Picture 1 (cartoon, rainbow, N blue to C red):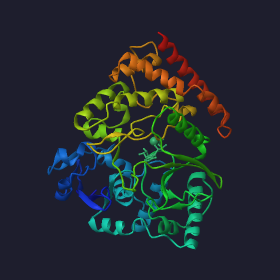
Picture 2 (picture 1 turned 45 degrees about the horizontal axis):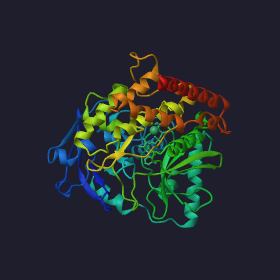
Picture 3 (picture 1 turned 60 degrees about the vertical axis):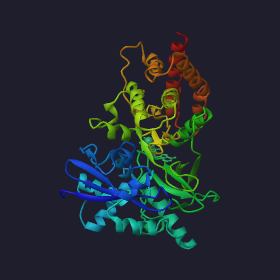
Picture 4 (picture 1 turned 90 degrees about the vertical axis):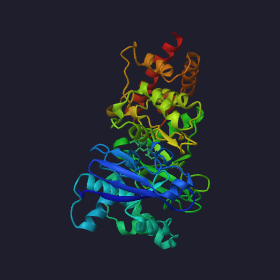
Length: 454
Ligand SMILES: Nc1ncnc2c1ncn2[C@@H]1O[C@H](COP(=O)(O)OP(=O)(O)OP(=O)(O)O)[C@@H](O)[C@H]1O
Ligand SMILES: [Mg+2]
């Protein structure tokens, strides 16, 4: 790798593109320096703990490692490294075409991927190679509406691409047409194939437009891969359970199109005027604050309350921030979602108006044997009779009184009362997954009920 890599961060948080500062990646350290104009504007920084009000003119630094090779906040702007990631495939093809060689695995290629796909994604920051590239991109974003015929052909190419990449159907498509009509699709994290697009809310059949197209609804469009048959029906059910339990939840729509199952979830990282809002995962917040933290397993569930308390010393957090988190873990336990990891919990806003993002990705992954973990975030239940007792005690570790804990647990039990039956009533979910999930949900429920009585 060249000794130093340079990039820039821009943002449209004010409604127009402005430069935030300069990014440098050296062998052992990433650094970011705010522009004077950005500092003077008082706008939120690129991440909560790297905010300009904390660092001022001093460069924000982070010791990079193989696991976290850039600032933690930038990780979600690099397409995930899994075989079905549409953006990674698309950008690797682009790099291959540009350089005429196979992009070598490692940080150099990851950095290229960040520069190619790290703008227009989730949250308020856009990464580019340099200011000129940034200005050019904003000039064409969102791209002018394509002519109808052109758009039709792009839509059909896009469906072909998705079918080939996700369903392994042997179809050819022309990436050039997709790119011209949709623009390079921004990176987005997570394991399930997905696209950031906008959808015509009026159209009968789903029609895609580039993100932020005026008059369209910005969505995260998740595409069900065959190895997780039924996942999106289960995810939609869990969104409903969370909504009915009183959690803020984005609107969603389950669509079927040409043999593909889709879940379009309205994006909540844009305000009513379509301006981007800062959004940062709990993973990124913890990793930025604690340089020894490198992966989800480096922290215990019972330590998260203290992490939120520490964050509350620099950010204005609502009084019920810990309680909300506790309630999320209870509902995850009772719905068989063992996958509530630190990337599936995010904060919206800057230091002055920081709050939990609405619920996303509540999929009950324990339906699949290889994801059948009580919790992706490890915990130590050795001092308890079983993990049911641990989860009750977790409320105390989050600073809640025992009356409050009882209330949270009984609310979660009430919200999931009909859950096992609702799972069994989903005809498109394979029987094996439904039965596994029902049994898990009933077992977890019985455990909590028993301890609640004690
Ligand atoms: N409605 C939304 N609005 C804004 N951002 C979202 C929304 N839904 C998801 N995201 C962002 O996109 C990322 C990926 O989405 P999601 O977690 O649903 O995907 P996934 O592939 O199921 O993830 P995982 O790997 O955890 O299973 C999230 O981590 C979050 O940053
Ligand atoms: Mg996720």
